[in-house]
Length: 340
Image 1: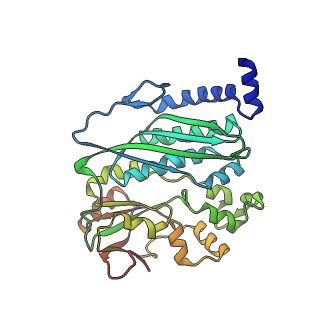
Image 2: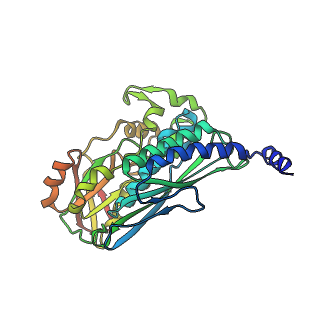
Image 3: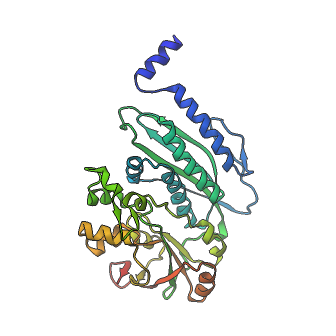
């Protein structure tokens, strides 16, 4: 009966033996990320012993890579999106001042492709190690009929910790505080559905191979630039910071207000940094209004920092890439972010 059942499941599109083999390979990579606080592995739940904190507050987040996954799949390069999902999640909890502790992933595809999964996981492992974050669990699901061959979904779950007294919540932000920006590497993980339409990628995937002189590389190489992780850079200056905003979906317009107290707004000076060539190319080719570009994309700024004017020099001395891109003002109209 066991052999008949196994064969029947395989005929239905699910290969249990292959799944077990893939999970065994993943387990070997995962152990390289373990911090001392990880207790065992391979159980039905993952265990992490929290210690060394006075008033620990756990900070959690979950996200996915969006339709950037389609660019990765079409390009046959799947390791960078593994890094993307970790870095995105680390940056999100960093905005609360949290140190990343552990990460879990979810990979779902129509048909298990071992080399594809191994590439994704290798990227996850690399990013976790760079952030000092343990990859302590996850799920790999084979779902025929839901996903087409070679397409997949990738989701990340992260838990971090911050001392209660050190939580960054933006409550101390006042008018005349300074907004600093840290550069992005490109689109990071947002706006790819629009990009696919602008460049006609779904109709003709070969457009990804086109070399653009203004980019200095092919379209796929630029679109698959890894979402930067800002935790290693920002960790030394967290005590000097009043608020952090990760510029992801909805761009400046949707993210900066999340950390602003009532009655305040952000004035962003758009000529204070160099717009990356990829954004200029997207805007030109798609005939997109500038205002909409700033509402969709990060435009070259992946993380914004709010601090007092007195702390600017010290922060910039530690983070030379940081640029002054604006200031906090009193809200005088409906808009909470003014870009000019």
